Amino acid sequence: MKSRFLVGAAMLAGIAFTLGGAAAAQQLGQRMQLFEKLRLHAQERQSKPADDPNTTPITAPGDYRFSFVHDGITREYLVHVPASYRTGRAMPMLLALHGGGGDADFQADDSRYKLIGKSEQAGFIAVFPNGYSRWPSGVMATWNAGACCAAAQKNNVDDVGFIREVIVRVERQASIDARRIFATGMSNGAMMSWRIACELPEIRAIAPIAGTDNTATCHPAHPVPVIEFHARDDDHVLFNGGYGSKSLARAEFASVPASQAKWVGIDKAQPQTKPVLTVAGARCDLHVAKPGGAPVELCVTDSGGHSWPGGGTQQGHKQPSMAISANDLMWQFFSSL
Image (cartoon, rainbow, N blue to C red):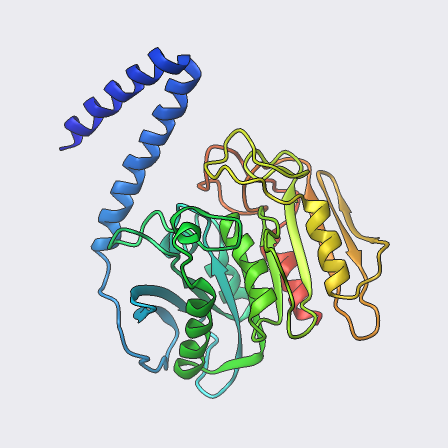
């Protein structure tokens, strides 16, 4: 089976070379390598314990896998409960949304994003919902984040309703502080975090990473604090808007400055910024909240491309920036609210 796959990949690469030159062949070869990695990842997922379809109470620390049918589609979410958890003592919840073409297991992998480790260190329950996938294994999933992405957006999948139901279910299953439900995400997942900030009043604050706000309209029920992370050399979601050379979604993404300006208005924050962190290779600037508003912060790294600052080296081909830790800074921001 594997040899036939490789032969097919070689034939397609040859056709691409003939029609589009070496660059097209190289790009196709990279995509076929990605497909093979995803195939192996799907096999790994199938070896994991089966999902629990019930809202079974979570009474002890550990990792849990659940699924339920929403809008006619079976959807999945993972829950990590840290060792410090005690039933009856409410903990914050962090929703962590994977990037487009990823899945919940990918986002929960500490060699990539280190969120499990941060959950243990800071004492919050980490929840990893799985986006919409056309495959039973749940791989290559995407989110309907507005102008992006892929099948989830094209099929108008109700991802907002799905995430709302995940929140409701986890609140029934574990002791959650309803006033401290936060969201973060990578790329397409970051874009989805902007959308649920617009539409879900349960969300207290968000920390989008490498993904801008591409919602057409946004009318949150209350001001939602934002800390955004982006690399200047992101080659998927360009800092100044549009899509980069490595982007698989051909959407004209909003720019980082446009997303910041939009939320400064929504959150009634000061239009001018003040620097709150300056280190070699990165800086963070804050729009302070006006009375009745919410703060909006932007952390920019000089390098790292389309990756999670301070994360592991297994995210892709490019080394993430180690100038800052997105996990540390987002949790510091959330804890200050």
